[in-house]
Figure 1 (cartoon, rainbow, N blue to C red):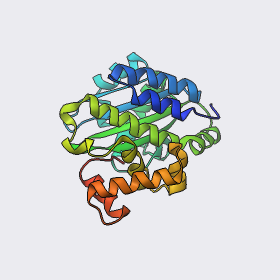
Figure 2 (tube, one colour):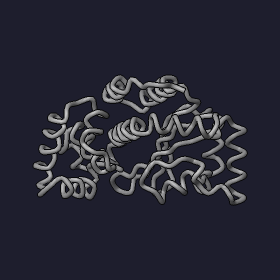
Figure 3 (cartoon, rainbow, N blue to C red):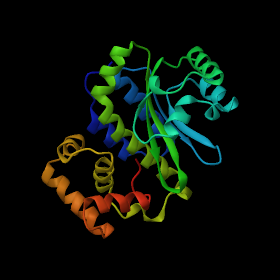
Length: 239
């Protein structure tokens, strides 16, 4: 597995995307950069419609949809109850349906290790961003510790682009914050401190402060905590 990620390059590519097909190409590039088996972005809406991109085989994607696995997939069910990234080993795989699903997934080339980031957006949007691989628990723990923060940021970028492509599902106010202001507020909402955010975004803490104050002003917020609450309630950021 990779020991460093050219995060800035990936984010620049994501900024430049104009179609879901571009996200597919970036999924492949990110998978190769991280040296893991799969990267997947998966949107499931309230009506059960699904779409996304990633490196799972076409056979598995078709099988997943055909079997309505989103209704029994322990990763979907587990992440729907959580707000923070989750290792697949922490999901409930004890039911008969979960065991059937897991065997089918492994038979179709899905790895035994997974790390999924739940994302909630406007109008009840729910999506997952997943890194998947075949390796030992120890190797996977090292990987998630090394790349967990990067994957959260990339997941946020993927979802923002997906919302842009699905314009009918995008809230009107979503343009009121600049992309960098959205990034800063999202990471603050996830509990990052300012030093970590500045490092993740490859900017100085002074520049970060400018973004945060600008966002606070636009939101009419009394302080940063108030700004985060307003941005979340308006669907301007997703966590």
